[in-house]
Length: 628
Figure 1 (cartoon, rainbow, N blue to C red):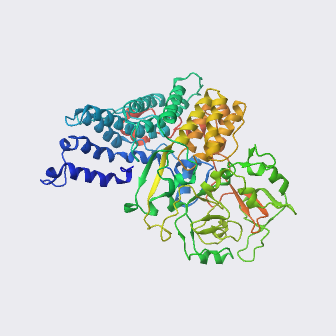
Figure 2: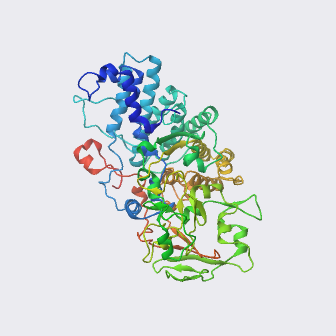
Figure 3: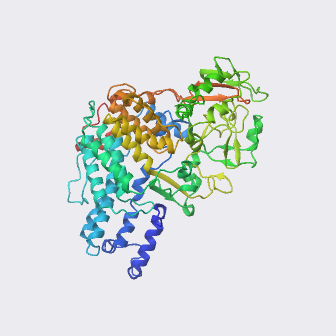
């Protein structure tokens, strides 16, 4: 656990100083020759460590979730996402097509290590495999976004043809990526060093690459998945390698995996680690997730309780969990504990709530009644209701008791305890959305929820952008590999093995009763819910939706392969709760960002364009992706 990714620069310097002291004592003092870099394993590793920036595109955090109904955003995050889900980008948009500088570094590792006279043959195998892993991961990000890549497998010189072509199809791209990853699985060591790849890291990513590759076969035409497709066998083989031989275990403390308490959990296969010596809150996902609320702001809206610090939260909140996501966290039914249902479909909800009762009145800053919820003029009511007289339930109990354990581990909702504060998000609470609308003060949530997942609680003295902190990003873990395995079995129409596997995360992470899905349709439904909540905020959901859309049928709500994707067009929902927690309304609306003008054009949305300026400069990059 010594070599962490954040230490790349410092570690590189230390290694070079230790192994090249005499060399550094001569001029020029700011250069190290190639011969020195590739003269030994230790020196070569300094260059390799400096190439791990490639893995930051797989960091946990909001990622592409902001394109989906998981997230309600504002400010810059909303503006960037709006371009995508409103379908207003043009063929000039660059989703990361030009990754060639990264690829050159990888090719230098592969070539220079092979040529080195000072590195042993055994070490060469491992270092070359590491270079291939990094090359594959650089290309995979391009392939999942754009489909076609510019495959380069050597260090180009001025004598080489530089106007190279793109691959002919996504399948050709994935063939190269899969080959690199298979080579990496073969030759990488089993040794686990935090922030560095090994055999199991490569196998874990390979399971997901193969699923994406299968989805984009025959693109842009429909894909027909055969249960005997070799790609499915690769998913199963590599998943079992990780599960059975890797020594990783599912983490019972789900929340801890994503904060300071379990940053090196035995479930984590690959993470990017940052250290407080050169990391501040502003450089982490916490900056755009934590509110900016003071006691003075709370008092303006007669909110309570007051925080026990004048200003505990001073961040720049821009994205929040949507009610759409919240509804995916299942609740154990009190009448039948073998069932896990959406919170508003349980027997306890049905017994306690009168839907259709009008509980909404126009908002007022002062004197707002404790038993009502505000009505905004530009929002539409989907459902409203009130707890029946005599019921012991409240909106808090219905939302929190017997619920998926990942609910409170991932999301801060009404009455959540966080950083020594009780955060109330009812009307006249201390951190709900009405603090920041209808003339209120900026800095509160837009959805009456905040992210808990990925938030550290040991920052001091407050959540201020300049406060230093450790931080880690989870890029791959055992739970994700198990879910990839479950998906492979679903594509083989093997309901038994599919449910067996996705029930592992459902039961251990969610503390829910196992799914009893007995047919492929119900298994897909339960699997999609499970993957959504288990991997939320891990840069997965958007790509999974696209993959399922390509598979079609049960994977995409009965729509054909390549059809529209309901989850990418559904309106964002928000729930407001009265101060006495007996009245509520679920609404949809523009939320200040025209946020519900969601469009999905299946003829082009499954892949971004090759930036037209690149094609204009090099016709060998043509043709442009379909319909761009």
